[in-house]
Length: 154
Image (tube, helix red, strand yellow):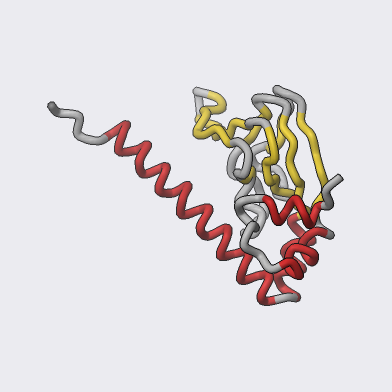
């Protein structure tokens, strides 16, 4: 059975981290499993954990007045559910539900924030990884908007 440190080192987000930093982070993580249809995150709830997906798929949606929850993306292995955890007021801005049985590493957000504050190299590496993740999601959103609202004359 692999340790949390080993699983963190295999995840795309932290694959390039030094083993000492993975060891430091490992104390904040534990394995979790979600059944298909199980709620993972609820929009507006405290962002106490984020999830590194190991297997399965999960939807991410946002509440739209008079329409309910609107799906904005589907996430799978090597992706991350929850990017609100590092930023005050530490509340989820989206909801997430497991589509398939989903296994993930749950990272305790307060534990990791404290370790990032205490160890600047860890903080720099974690925030650099999350900045890259958010850049990629912003780029994907731009492409979706171009697809929806771009000039389709032809």
